[in-house]
Image 1 (cartoon, rainbow, N blue to C red):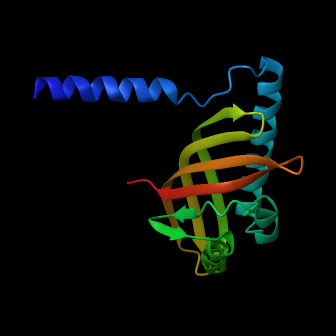
Image 2 (image 1 turned 60 degrees about the horizontal axis):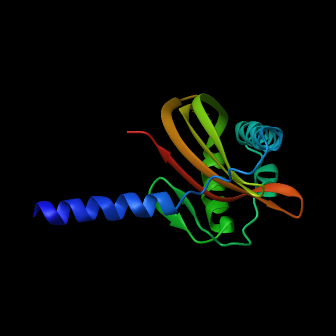
Length: 159
């Protein structure tokens, strides 16, 4: 049993060393420029979400890779399906505010980056009832046709 545990540990360690995904050859200036581009798009998407502007949200996504989108335990094979769900939610509310408590942007390559974020939201419906909650988000960005786009997201409410 101890030999099996040691072998498994060595196998996992070896595999993880071979799977380094962050591009070490990017200059600090290039990495910072990508970071700023992702931050700018994320801020624009937050504003579009708060404005419940589906067209602006849709413009920031490219579903070419068909990586799928996940929201609160539901899988959407296309962004169009995910957007239908968002539309239904937006139709029920009058106001929406996000407060990002923490976020991280990881530049993986000249054409790929991740953003993870956690925070809170507050939504108010037509009857002026307010409901608040936590969110946990992951976005995968790819540079497509010289523009950064969301190609996958995983969004959930914290528990």
